[in-house]
Amino acid sequence: MSPSRSPDAAAAWPAWPLRLLALAYFTMGTGTLAVVGALPPIAASLSLSPSAVALMVSAFAATFAVAAPVVQMVAGHLPRRTLLLAGLGILGACTLLSAGVGSYPLLLILRILSGVGAACVGPVVSALGSTLVPPQRQGRALAIVFSGMTMASVVGLPLSAWLGEQIGWRPLFVGLGVWTWGVALAVALGVKDRGRGHAVRLGQLVAVLRRPGVAGGVALMVCQMAGLFTTVTLINPLLRDRFGADTAETSLALMVLGLSGLAGNYLARWLADLWSADRLVAVSLGGLTAMFLAMAGAPARLWAALALLVLWALANDLFMPSQQRRMVELAPDARGLVLALNSSALYVGMAAGSFTAGAVEPLAGVGMLPLVSAGLMAVGLGLLAATRRRRAVASASGAEARATRTVQPPAACPAAR
Image 1 (cartoon, rainbow, N blue to C red):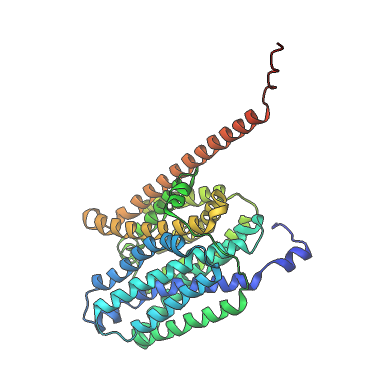
Image 2: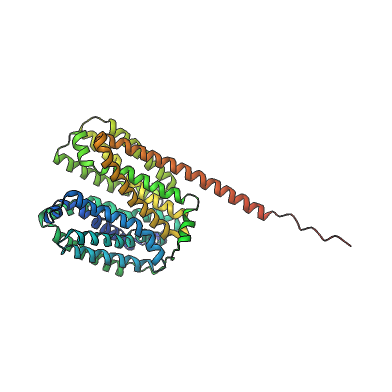
């Protein structure tokens, strides 16, 4: 049974602002994945190879990874809502301009600029969502906000692929650009928070990374996403070659993965009120490790693939809101910065996982990818255990130091002459 809320708490729950922030996340995610979905028509229109189009995805991810902490250093002092609106404005403009370009270099430049806009959206959406609720409700709030990214993979990606084939990628990008500006208007009208973040200097960035658990949390994020994308990058050939799925069955499997992700997000919201962030991250990584090991040895049947994909989605959707909540708890006074670092690590992990998939598949085949993913998830579990130990040691040392300062011997009286 989920914890009950008093009428006053229910009235104070910012349902619509959180939904609008989730919509902003959905918009950013769909804009990111639209190039993946519309890859064939883009390649045909500009006479490009699929690998050249895929480079736009890598350029976007790399730009985001670098820009997210830089944005916090340069513009972190601005109101978070203002920064979010600026990011959505940049995304919308770059998407609209992309629809009209006729050369690959210009399109690549616009994707890089889109990465800068996205770096103003992703971390700021999460930070803003966590400030709208009291600390004990942050887990649920972050799960609601991150459901936008889940919906981007469930709805945005397949819809972009279908529209790209039906109406062409240029009209698709026009529609996405207009949609993005419409979401910016909705956020401007519906999210009234005027809270400011804090401008970050390089020294502060280093100081935050040196806090107990923060650097380990960033590394954990890289491992989880690298493990995920080692397999998901080549999920289509894996389903075909490992489980014998044809084109229709592959589409069914991906739909099952997406719909299960929605259920996983609701599960994450419910458990966020009951379990700690550390526990949820551990359960997620443990479940993903077991699932990838099972995927490597499961029967070559479609039903086995579908069952594993359900487990994949449920375990994976526990991770991201719990990881974000965990990072905020590690540095609550620098939430914008730690969430930016977390987002950067996410995109570094994407790039690392995609590279790993491309390196492993020619040497060992797609059947080896789940084993590599399981290994990376296990490394993430080790990092989680190590960071928890370090935090415990630091906490114990701090408590001992405070106790020592509290109990001081009385000052010696001056010697009588």
